[in-house]
Image 1 (cartoon, rainbow, N blue to C red):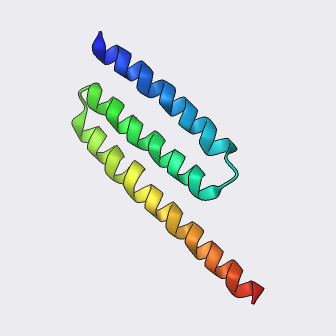
Image 2 (cartoon, one colour):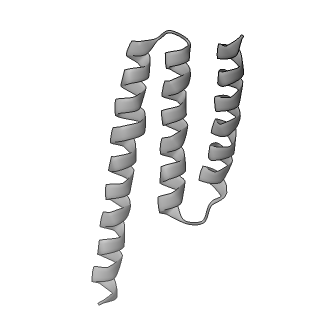
Amino acid sequence: MLNTVFIIILGSIMLVAAFLAVYIKNLVSSVIAAGIISLLASLIYLLLAAPDVAMTEAAIGSGLTTVVFLLALKNIKQKEEDTDD
């Protein structure tokens, strides 16, 4: 019963983070919101007794993907600054 309540709460927070990821104008904040969605998904997997899937989602979905997106945004901003000069 308690697991179900936690899953509902985490799912609701995921929906809010998804809404923010789509509608926030700042791209860095959108990427962070998407990373939060993956992190919460890994917590749900952990509550559903799938620790291997939770670890994979946390490492790849939340960690690596967020870092790759942030690095891509940084490179795009640097190239825009280079072309403006």
